[in-house]
Length: 112
Image 1: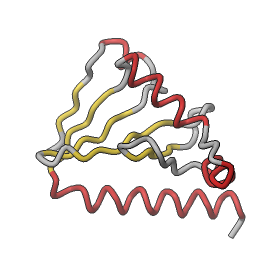
Image 2: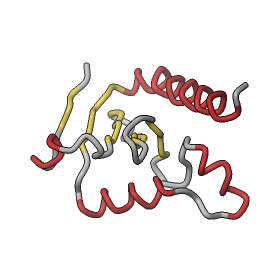
Image 3: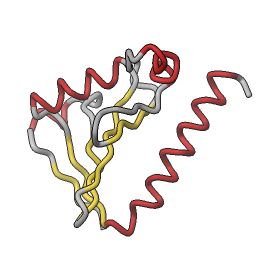
């Protein structure tokens, strides 16, 4: 069962609003944020230290992070995001989705 919660009525009007994928009862979560052009989907860990975008990988050694890490902090501070609630039993499948999306993004970017 998935329960979708919108903490702010403005969230529904903007497709670029990030999504918090919350797993209960553990309270683990992942952020989902779209690219600037709203074409690609990226995932950010709950600590806000990892993003699945290519910019993160290119900037990692310089400790610069990426645009999405800064953007998610802004949205969280403003309370502008939606939350989708899952059962903890769904976490493994969700993690597989993140890995697959990241691999596909790497393939697209490097033409593997």
